[in-house]
Length: 325
Image (cartoon, rainbow, N blue to C red; front, side, top):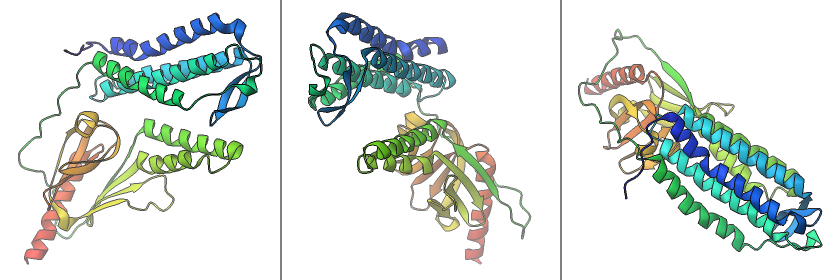
């Protein structure tokens, strides 16, 4: 079966928000059908399978609609901003899967309250979570199909690698910061949610959220540096700028620069490991590609990569010349 290839940015945005519209209409129709059979208040939050949070039916519906609208606007805006990048098909697939999870969970919670006189007696079986996740898989596949095929990875340019015209005996340094706004937002949301859950429900319950935020934020904004010691990456959010990756000159075989397709080549954002190498890819675009002496590659997406590569190759040549002498 051939995938549909949207030809315009606006069409892809509409495809992205379509599942949110479907969920909103479904939830609204379900609420209209069962409104007269709901308790007041109704159970809206559960710890395990027992209800521990309650609100009026109107407040629950308004909260659900606010979440869905916010997610729809955010997803549509993100796709619109990155409409010509290779990761857009996967962003659309993620929007479809997330919309399915949200819609299924919201509708099942509403149905669990139907014909119940005491909201505290409402139960939400664990199998409902599995149902929501199960619905997400075909929804994500549908979104990926409608989004169309991603462009093929760019061909790697072959040719002479650049050097910087640096006089003998002089040194220079190069540094740029690369950040991923979606990963920064995700890290902040995870930490904020973890703190909120920790205060309200206990720190053990929030451990997963806090650990997730602590793992995402350091890699969401990184300072890339090339100097006489080699290539290094330092998280900008950590107080002492500790390096989480350093490649010394004696491990560099050769460096080059090219356009990197984040999702098509690495399957997503962040620190990625694949056969033949690894890399920190926070967006699609210009990047440094270092061929290591062990035959593997290390990739980092960053602006002005050509200058960094020229300086790194110059320092590598000097290091080899010293060893040869």
